[in-house]
Length: 422
Image (cartoon, rainbow, N blue to C red; front, top):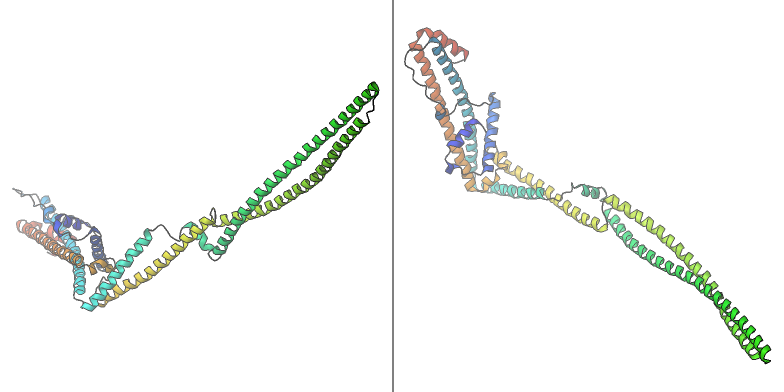
């Protein structure tokens, strides 16, 4: 914003500021663009003026007595510089005045539109406002297909459903295999326990056999001593002892045989369990390796996470399609709005894309119009003021020539230097 704009804002009545900050910025942007365009056409550079309104320019203090030649020469130079500066200010003010006038002219063209055409313009503006709001809402959302994790899904989009299905099957299979491994491990531990119990049973049978042999020998000795000492027959005790020994021996041999059979059978069962465990472990390792690859491929922990990501990605794609559709429709209605305005010779039709709300809100439209009218009036005052300052400077130069005829050559020299025609 230039120097004069800041001065105008200080002098403006607060009640006149009927526009919002955003509307004010859009208005300034449109006017500044027209000013720059005009400056480029007339090859005028932007500048910062040395003075502006009357309150910034003090009257010269009256000096009594005669001034020296140097003081008169300095006064001539000062007035010439002020003339050049006022001319520059007037030229720039004129350009801004033309820009504001053109802007006002655009507003008047819009006001003079036929009711049916104005309705078409308002409909297009309303669509632009609504679609722009939708676009801004989408841009504020966190879900976008540009998400790095979504880019992975996009790369494998064609096979992702098959991979997800296979991942679920592999996870279910992994659960079954783990359960099988637990059962096999439990069975194997149980068989090993039984295997150890057979050894303990066999040791017990050996102890029974030894104890029985010792008992039989002892009884035989006892019976022999009694038969010798008492001179009695010990046939029955001998027979009973032999029968007892035979029964115990039969039991020991039977249990020993059964233990050997169970030993061989349990050994086979243990080997079978080990073999099955090894096979299941191989399947488990292969399945786990395949799962790890799938997890790494999609950068997930499990199929549930992949399924969640897939849902979010699908949602983001849908929103992206809506966004693209919104963009196409927004471009359509923007072009339609511009076409309607250009049809009615509105010079800066594109600025209304960003001021579409003023086309459907009469209060806002009137606010822009009032702001421009006030601004044009201040610019007119500014140009008149600079013209007055310029006339005062010429008057002072004439007074110097009347008072000091001998300075005519100096005055003409300075006028020629600054390209000023007296």
